[in-house]
Image (cartoon, rainbow, N blue to C red; front, side, top):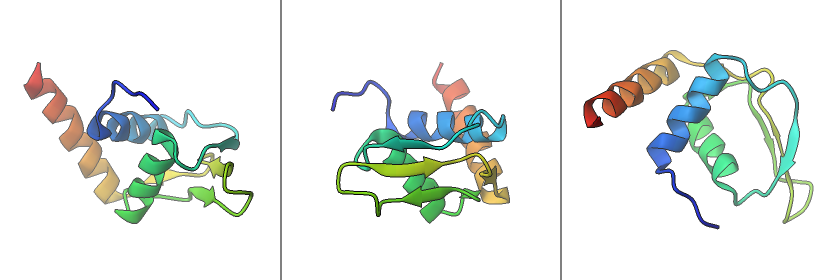
Length: 90
């Protein structure tokens, strides 16, 4: 799967979208997709709470539900850091 975004870019976009409450529905996605892997990373690093990631559907589909996801204080700090990093890189 090709991608033009780095992991940090993907994480910044995810955290920003969660902060803006842009996820209004659950979706089924490939558990190996960049979005799912980035969400799992954000949960593992405790950047977000309230996310539902369910891989019990099948090996090819997973549920991703971010409708109740919120940034933790660590997630807010990480988002600020990623935004500052992006600004400095320009």
